[in-house]
Length: 196
Image 1 (cartoon, rainbow, N blue to C red):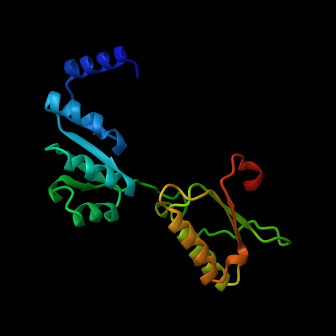
Image 2 (image 1 turned 90 degrees about the horizontal axis):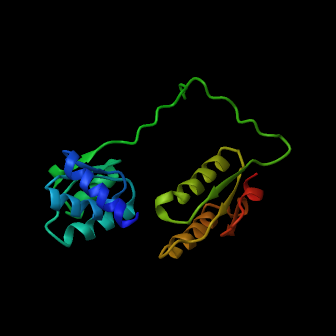
Image 3 (image 1 turned 135 degrees about the vertical axis):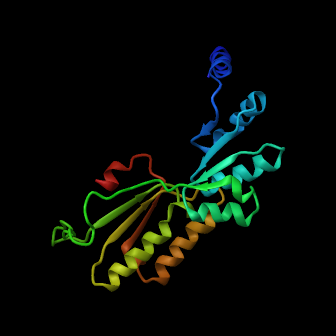
């Protein structure tokens, strides 16, 4: 954002004077912090990721800045509480809502799988704990135990400081005895040929 746009945005905030600054991504809280101090307006930050918790912990420990936090799950809220990052009365929980369009218990249809080949699923992205790639491996194991073999192609590499997790994924696939069903491609700039 150019300097002139920042000045206009700031002046608009002075004229409009909102009751609260809502931040939809924790990384923007640093900027909201300064506007909050200048205008004495409270900040409400939406936290979805584990990385956001560490960011908020660092930000809140650096000054007397306080804000309210909306967590997307009890898990995220529990981490804030256990680490005593913020007072419990400043934490709120609001799930990101997803409502299925069908009744999952009565309208389950068989997968449209060609009988002559094993279905293959793709998991594209950095190999990091927050994305639950280990849960996918466990699901493959459960399906194998129920007589349905599937293959999974993991497209991506370990993110910063997560190579231990990526190595753990390989070990887990071996432990679950599904390593023959899993393919690791590493980073690919063109994933279309892999997932199509």
